[in-house]
Structure formats: structure tokens, C-alpha cells
Image 1 (cartoon, one colour):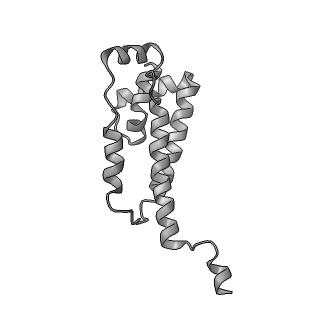
Image 2 (image 1 turned 180 degrees about the horizontal axis):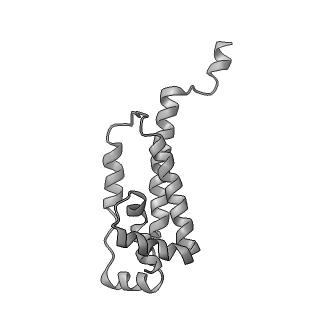
Image 3 (image 1 turned 60 degrees about the vertical axis):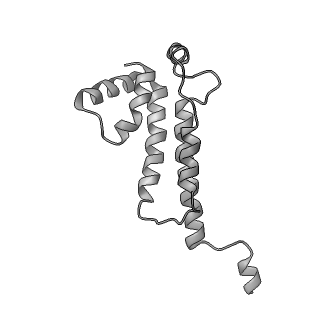
Length: 133
């Protein structure tokens, strides 16, 4: 297994969606590739934070999910040439954000949405204490 293949299945590994053979190949690659192991650790940590907030209900603005999905879907599919070039350069397409950075961005966006919801539900606005005093 190479780094490109490994990074394509990291999220499936976190979600326990790999068969036994895939897990063995994945773990074999991680045993000698510090970059992929570090990426797995970062995504697993973000996944743990998101799992911990599953019970929290968040009121988001109307159309929020539609706007996010539209932004994701608006990214064009890479051409055959771009895919070949990405394979040759370790998975980075010219002029595009690397997949692992996009994943961190998606997790970050989800964490921001949760934080806004928690602030809205449990927090108070800065200065309210001074006004009441």
C-alpha cells in the first residue's frame, strides 16, 4: 500500500468500515510511514471530539447545510491528466487543496458549528455581566 491509497481509506478505518485484509495492509503501511500515522492520529482525534458532542443539539441557520453541500459539490472533478499527475506527486493536484487539508477543514468547520451552537445555547454574550452589575 502506498501513501495515496492509505490516505484514501483513513476515514473508512476510523469508521471501522475496512475488512480484515484491508486493516492488515493499512497497519503494515502505518508501521513504516510516520506521515500517514500522524494523519490518522489527527483525524482520529478530531473524530473523537465530534463523537463526544453527539448528544449536543445545535440550531443552525436555515440553509446552512445546503450552502455547505453546494460549496463541496461545486468543486470540479479532476481530469485524467490531473489524476495521473496527482499519483506521481503524492496525491496533490495542481491548484487544489490536498485531500488531508480539506478533511481537516471539514472537521474544523463542523467543530466551529458545534462551538457556535454551544455558545448560543449555554453561553452568554461578552459584557452582559457588566450590564447587570
